[in-house]
Image (cartoon, rainbow, N blue to C red; front, side, top):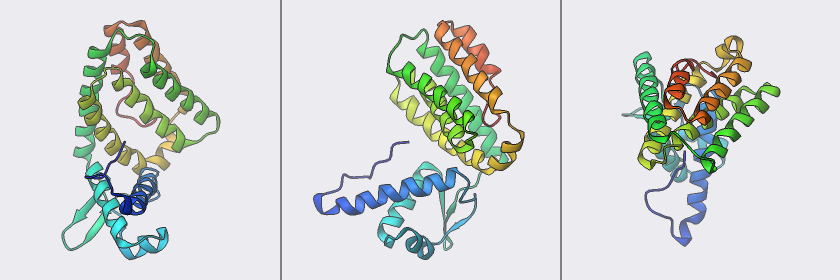
Length: 222
């Protein structure tokens, strides 16, 4: 997800601005990979020492991560990695399904272009990650595939809403990364995405919607 500060930095603020973006990138990866666990406290003193930055850029980075839904600020208790309840997860998966169905309805039939290239590229990354047994890369390729799927509709507000839902769902994915590494079948996951892409390329809305309905929206890496 693309991040931006509330106002563009002036010349004298460029270094701080860059530190903020680097910190956002570093912490978001640690959160979405499961390295920082849901509910884990984010202690400023420890983070500034570990990341080698001052409190000001760290606090701005945490504010931006909170806007994404990856960090929560608790009164008198500081910040922590956001945690999702079972109800949160059910609601997010429900929203994801509705938005994907709407996107396909608006997009199909599609013609060759950058959007389809992104969809194919994400699938290629998925195959490569499977070949290297790289679960983190597999998860990122999975997210990119579904984001590219919705991008076919060419609607900016839809894309922004969908990506905000998807990044929160990655919290749930991170929570279950180790368990799913034992249970999930990545080969089947690749095949399901191949079938969904074929349905999209067919241009038949009904076929694409049917494939989406059996795609396995409520399981990880599928």
